[in-house]
Length: 409
Ligand SMILES: [Zn+2]
Image (cartoon, rainbow, N blue to C red; front, side):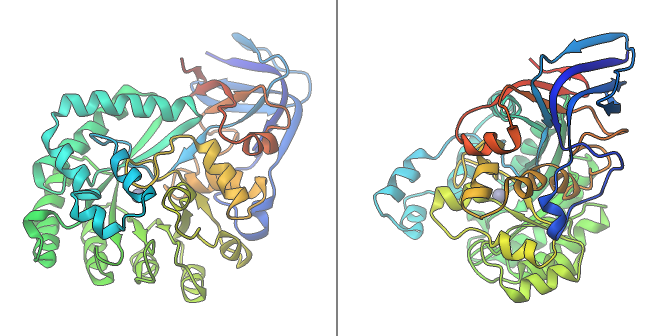
């Protein structure tokens, strides 16, 4: 059925000809249209304009409100068993990462609780998380495993993500992150765990078709550049592109490993110097910043300004997770990109829409309002939304959510 959305005050993020990403100076450009309409059919955008609107089978009056494309959150850990607020309080009291780990905290704390939870309970809890993400404007979502760290529990997490794909009309992509941490069973045998992951877990994940991407936590005290290269290469054998955690805690070769293996994205990059920027310029890997993590942990922000000024594209994501970034609201991520990373509102907007879609190779399907793309868009009563949404940070400015042309309740 054709649907006409008319009487739109302003549409942000329109494209007549879809671009695959925005890089460097292009990131400061956001096309918009005033007093406009959008025509959709079969869940896709057929066209938009500000001339006399065409006829359609269904007419939706948006009463002068503004419209923007749905947010694309390309990096989350939205399936978890429990929050870790007690660790957060320990951090406030000045306890170190090592002290918190010794008290049973960190990723292994999440793994312990997730292993003990049934698949049904995990699914119920995750449903709520995804509803929260969507209600703040996320209409395309990536979710990782990585709190199981053994065969049964990783498969349980990935099956939950598969059920979430069925339960929601948004696009959800699934990432196998068996290499999130070394589990206690392999405490002094990291290499043994990498072998187990490559030889046992990965084939099982692939045989059930449970993942779209593969991820490795390439960082100090976690997995090395060599481990990362091995795991990413093994992923390609099952047609799983890499999207990796790189350089959160140090200059660990994560960016080099991501680019060398053709990973779609290298995420975190709190430690990203000239050498890393040069490597990124020579490849096609999308640099992704996670400002919620820097805010919540009090660690440095990714040098987004230098990355964009070097002519590169840049993406922002929430890293929604119970340990280091419990933010499910991409409007706050947008705002942190502006205030903390010194991005223009336009640059941070492109970082959470078009470039985020590109980081999952979904740029032909979403990330802007463009003919042929999915009709995933948000309605806000906020005037001058491109500026006032990140400016009035912490609120939910989204009043209406349309996914493939249908209103999401
Ligand atoms: Zn993460």
